Image (tube, rainbow, N blue to C red; front, side, top):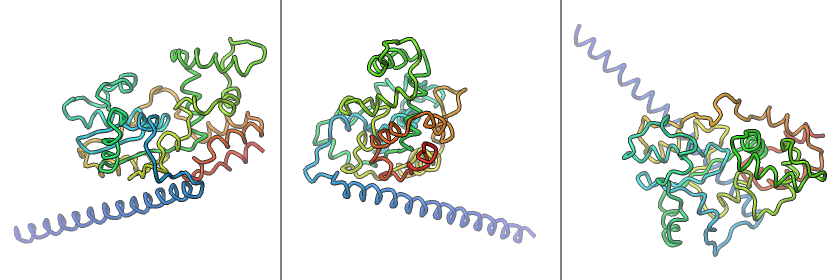
Length: 303
C-alpha cells in the first residue's frame, strides 16, 4: 500500500513538473515571438524613414533617459507616463543592500534617489560597452493616451506648482490673446501649444518616445508595452534573473483617480478641432507605426 501511494505521489509530482515546464516554455515562446515582431517593426520603420546612422553616437539627451542597474546588467529607458516611477522602484529594489519594500519607496523620492545611475554619468566609451553587454529595455504607450495622461497628471493638480502654475502660465501667455491667466489650462490649449512649440525644448513628459529612447540606433533587447505591462514586466524580470519574489508594482501617484485609458482619452480628443487633431498626430507620426499603435481609433471620433 505504501509503495503504491509513493508511486502515485511520484507520478503526480512528475506530471505537475512537466505541466509547469510546458506552460513556462509556451509563455517563453510567445514572448519571443512578440519581441521579435516588435523589434522587427521598429527596425522597418527606422530604415523606411532613414533614421539609422552608421556613425551613430548616443545623444546626451538620450543617455540621460537610460538608467543602469549593474547587479543584473540591466538598462532601462525612462519614458514618462509609461510606468517609469514603478520601474525606478524596481531598479532600487534590485539593489539588495537597501533592504526596502516597494511601499517604502515614495513617488517623489523615487525620482530623486542618488542611487539611480544614468548612462550619461559614464564616458562615451563606457556607455557603448554597457549598451552592448547589458539587457536593454524600453516601454511604450499609445502616444495620444500618453499625452492625455501627461495633461491630467501635470495640469490638473495644483500641488505640482512647476507644471500647474509656471508651465501652464507660460502656455496660456502664448496661446491666449486676452492675457487672462486665471482659468485653468484647457486640453485644447495644451494641444495647441504642443503642435507649435520648438521641438528642441519639448518637455520629456510629452516628447515622442522614439526621440527619448532612440530605438533606431539602440537595439533594445526587450520592448514592452504599457497595455501589457504586467506580462511584459514579468518577462523582463525573468530575463535579467531578478529575485523570484520581485514583481512589477501597481502603484499610482494619485491612488483615488482612474488611470488614463482609451475611453478617457477619447473624451478629451472629442473636444479638439479636426485640424488641430491632425497636427497633433503629426507630432507623433513615427511613434504610431514604430510601436504598432493605431491613430485611426481617434480619427473616427474626430470626424
